[in-house]
Length: 298
Ligand code: NDP
Image (cartoon, rainbow, N blue to C red):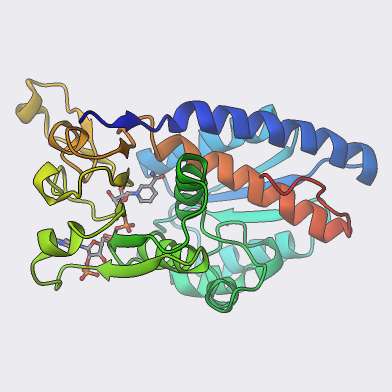
């Protein structure tokens, strides 16, 4: 068997297109653009790239982008004061503070200071709680993007066996909650899981969010399963003749021989994250303006 490739790049582009139409409709109704504020503290190169793409894609979707780039030495108090200003700014619907933050800043304290109704990353404990009890809140972008790809591919997920490898608050745990919400039978595996291949091989859906290059092998996968690879790992240049190739947490070549469908790296889950961030910002804008979002397909 050779797996179908789940094309996250095309899916994300189409999602951004629908968001742009809805953002224009929002502007016409509300008399203002939906607004997303992104705060970056310090000069982490990967974070700078993410923040630049977020700003660009926000503007392309017809929303207002407010970028706050702060020096690495910014105090926690100054950062909290900025978050407070953004919480109270009616032009700002969503607030994202880019992680990781410099060591002298308590990330949990900063995330906890963001208004849960502007927390478009879905990292605030109130939104984690809302997800756990099935209330409308904001769901972290990467796992919500994975769920969109799965539903697009499989339709109803009800009754399927799902194994999520990884239990981070950002990916693994919310992914498991989302799959449970879709009536999957969910197993969460992690570094202390015994016999991981045996656990994975019973899954109809495998979501790998580990951060270990090509760890999940094809012979762990049940034939026909759908495999979602969240991992983004850059191999050292020496491994790939100086190229530093990007790979996922799944050994793509062997898994694609067995799976029914699989996301590639790059071009699978990665492009979904920012598209879902824009989706969350648009939802926040409608809620903040007291308007209905008449499209439940996003
Ligand atoms: P974390 O490091 O926070 O979590 C990794 C998880 O994997 C932990 O729960 C850990 O278990 C588990 N784990 C580690 N080693 C093993 C092992 N040998 N067997 C089983 N489980 C193991 O990572 P994140 O969740 O933040 O990210 C995971 C991956 O996804 C990374 O590659 C990251 O780059 C990528 N990512 C991609 C995004 C995108 O936009 N596409 C967004 C976010 C992340 P334990 O809890 O026991 O330590």
